[in-house]
Image (cartoon, rainbow, N blue to C red):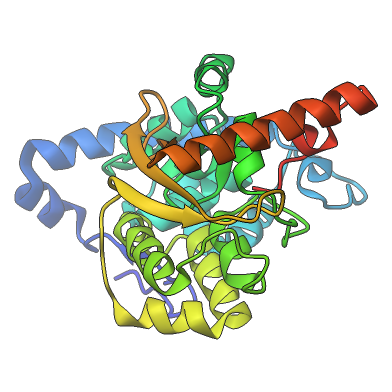
Length: 326
């Protein structure tokens, strides 16, 4: 009987039944199909591992390296899984892998979205395209679309409120300092870590709970993923108010809302109606477009746009447009 130590059972990993004959009787055709995928899974992982160099992942090359690309133990270490477990996976042994573990291996091996989906299929795990929404890039077509909405502010968010693309009117409205030094700009980080006088959202006690509830509705599809878990942990540490709202467990979907904003260039509040639109080809991402909720807000947005043009005409460049805060 094969024994598996506790060390080999890392988080998210499970072993398959220890008796292949029993597995075949219990699994029928599905078990046979899965066994047929294992040699292909083994070959696929070996080929992807061979093309990633130590330099690609920030590791020294070392001496007497005979293996092209990374070693198995290096992939295991970088992925946060046991060496024995990863070796068995690459050998096509009868083990199961959770989506979180496959995601970690895929990140280490730098798999493209199509390759990641192929990995899931070979491992017999249901593939959720939305799992890659964190790393998707907005193409020229989507950027052109939101640019064409100017003078109406527009932005592309992923479910974690990372900002993937903005137009100039959005940058006029959210003219606040950047609060994170690395990684994608994130609206929640800015709103929860900015002082109240710098926060562009006027009614924080109304708007921020709704945003956190919307964040939680997306979190359900990413529970256990390192990027999401570290984001929640770090923002909770940086903002006790966010931590309090997160503990409430409230959930809300994106939707049409009327929000009040303050821009440093104008003294009055700007009331805007927001509408969320899904984006084909960007799973879980959405375009949020804003339109003035009244005549006064429309005039204020016109004033912001005029100030932007004056800056550009006066300096020959618009730093505000080149480096949006959000």
